[in-house]
Image (tube, rainbow, N blue to C red; front, side, top):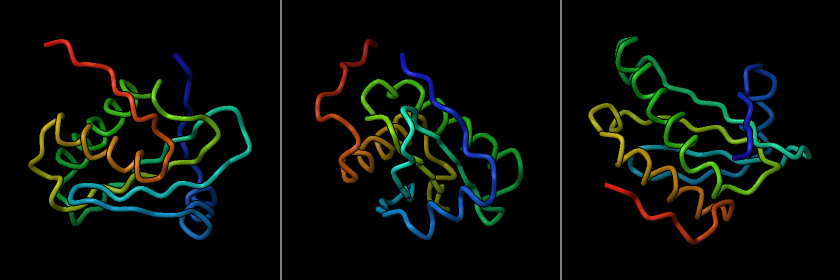
Amino acid sequence: MKFSESLKKNKDFQIVYRKGKSFANSFLVMYVYPNGLEINRLGISVSRKVGNSVVRHRLTRLIRESYRLSEDNFRCGFDIVVIARNSARASDYRSIESALVHLGKLHKIVSEKKDTDTQ
C-alpha cells in the first residue's frame, strides 16, 4: 500500500485552493493540485459551521479512513484537500466513502475499477 502524508501548513492549503481544480457533491468538496512528488498529500477541512468538535472530528476520521482504505485506487503525485459540507454531518461511512471515490473519479485520479467490499 502506498503511503500518503497530511497537508498541514496553511500555505500548502492556500496553494491548492488557488491553483487547484475543484469538484463537489452533496457531502464533500475536493480540490486537487499536482505536487510533483511520488506521494499524495491529503488535507481535510471541516468548518465550525458543520457542528461541534465531536461532529467535526468524527467527520475528519470518516474521511481519513475512507481515503486510507481506497488509497490504492488513487493515482500518486497530488495534493488533495477535502472539505466536508454541512449535509455530511449525519452521514455514515459508506456515504462518505462513496462521495470521496465519486469526486476522485471526476478529477480522474481514481481508477474506474473498485475493489468489491467483503461484507
